[in-house]
Length: 101
Image 1: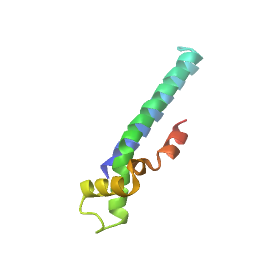
Image 2: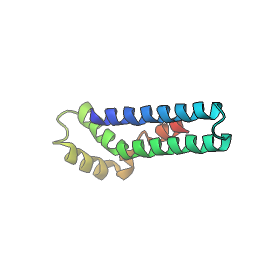
Image 3: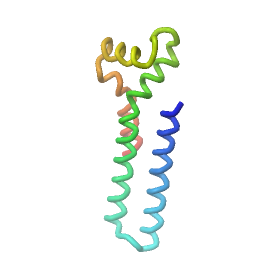
Image 4: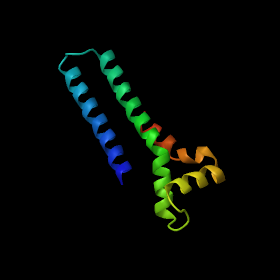
């Protein structure tokens, strides 16, 4: 539950910052280059935040969709890494990256 909240907060912050920078740029207070720098920095920071939460979200999803299979979050984490490899914890990260860029 909290992972979803943090994801939404990071997305909300990205939209807020890009919106503010865009408005300042439209008013002529910053150049187009500076606007693009801020825009890319916001996208990169939101992506990194989400990338850090992806493994936690993967474990949470497995716990919710497979009740009784895992004893808890730590056991789910270990089992996923053991059976599917560490890359399995990053499923969905490609779609996230595509969404930000």
